[in-house]
Image (cartoon, rainbow, N blue to C red; front, side, top):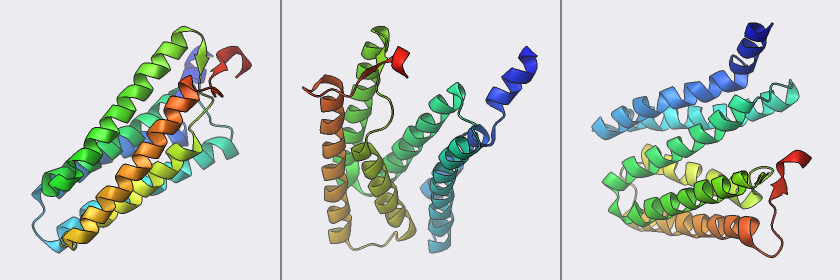
Length: 193
């Protein structure tokens, strides 16, 4: 009985999709960092696009077919964050203008980890991702995948993407600061979950 429940908890379609996204990360990084031809960048961008599509699908499947699991609640955001980090890091190596975006991303994520752990110790947590975070993730993925797919993009467009990404990351960062420590905090007791 326990073994069956354990397998049911781990081997769900959403969890397998999240694991698939984690497997795609080193494949993408290798192809992108070694790309010299347009078709190689196209493959790298397609890998990231597939990752994004599976990210959208896994949550819908989990909710629709009641496959939400504790492991899934960890794997899904972990796959998101590692994918975003890898994508931003690889692109920063080609476009140094993206280093501030990478730094802001790291500071924001570090803050969320520290604030999350701090509140978990008190038996509290955010009930889910904030809308500002979801919008930021969408903007990041779309803009960064565009940079992968179009390696010869006009430098002004690259600068514009860096600026837009920085703005959305900043808005998301401030939203999470307010959600954790603001006057109208969104943190809830875990018992009410």
